[in-house]
Length: 333
Length: 283
Figure 1 (cartoon, each protein chain N blue to C red):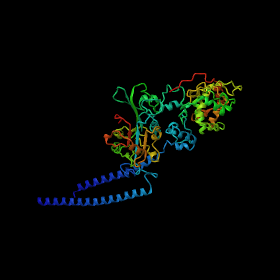
Figure 2: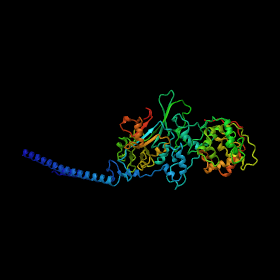
Figure 3: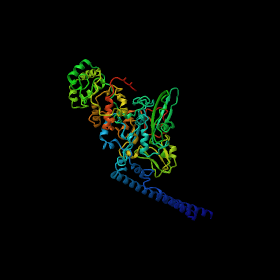
Figure 4: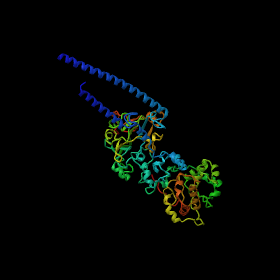
């Protein structure tokens, strides 16, 4: 064979060998394992650690809150949507509790034509524009007990039942002789129906009320509610001075006003009027909510931050208001 | 003499060709033997892999899954919690130009025959949220006469025939066996061909890292039995994820029980994100 051909072949072979060696050297070990890519990179990507945990992770420590949330209608909004990712919590510190709920909640609930009509929406300019959402709504169970029960009872039958079962504690005219029991005269009928039903069903319990309520029929409850709602709520001034400072209570009452009204006469008949109510009863009830003895998704959240002094002040303020006199605030959308 | 020389040359040529032929036969046999050996080796390897451990992690075998994603635009409320969750989960740069998933808004006003389209990256929406790090749709059509309007969440379609994979010059992006298109950030050279190739605009260039990035359906989560972060975060169930090999998985039921549509079917990419409730203008 001519020499120049041999040289050419050798050169080509050398180049090929060099090229293959370079390719072998520069190609990562796992490159062609499954295809034209590095198989190791799949495992690398899969090895990243999740930042968002799941509600199951939160449940470990916050079981009570988890139970409340998972039973209510915000159960599709997982913890970390509002509180941020759980990675590193609790080791690295606390997760934020959103302060500006008005801004947070309107992300989903501001009325927009683009949103499906099934989504609950509000007009922020008209729906209590000065209030934080969390003042009335418990973010973990936001639906208010605001469904107004229908009251069709007969006040006359209610008066007979009252004399028979209730008057000994709540007073002949629905004005209780004892500071620890509530006045019922002039109370919202729809609220009375709801609360008596709760005592009857066991959803709410009280050593005195539960056995009494269990003897009542649904018709009795309707009649009693109609009877009390029609009574005058004017009570004789309590001889005992209230324990709290009504002035300080007035400042705190701003947080209650959206539901119970600034003077204790609320917007929605499903919620109780508290103007002129017994101060001791009001304070006891707030403490019962705080301790979890009395359960209400909204009240439980509202009273969480109140001190004993705050409660006394609030009770003194609302007890000093005159009931039923002021015009009821209009219902807001 | 000339004749003899010519015969000699012919002989030489014949000899040369014979030698080359012989060499080729030998090389062919060697190659065949080598391939057979390789095939045996690969087979042995995959057998042992199946017997010993699954790939890519001990608890996750990518040959057993066929992931798919569903979007029900009729449920989306445009709260953008998915976008926020995605950015946090995947450390996406917090600017208005980098998104693994995003939400578009289509609004048809009375008397107009084309929708007005914006996303959370629109300056008006950034102004409403207060910063590029927060996401909120401004209520900009509050006083307009809206005939029809809806939100459409978007993300990588993890196509069956991904054009982004086709154009990558270095094998840094590929289709995993479970259907997800992944990016090898160690191999990506940042040429951005894939960003150009994607007809859905699903890819972006991460200037901080010098690599391309995109939605992976949270591959690190789905390989651990979790849902993608956006699916977990969605409060209205507008995002559905699951394994198509499981006929009772949420995505299988979603595809079976709805009339679904994919984006830009004419491209032949065969997307794996299935939409319900979108209009012809959505692409």
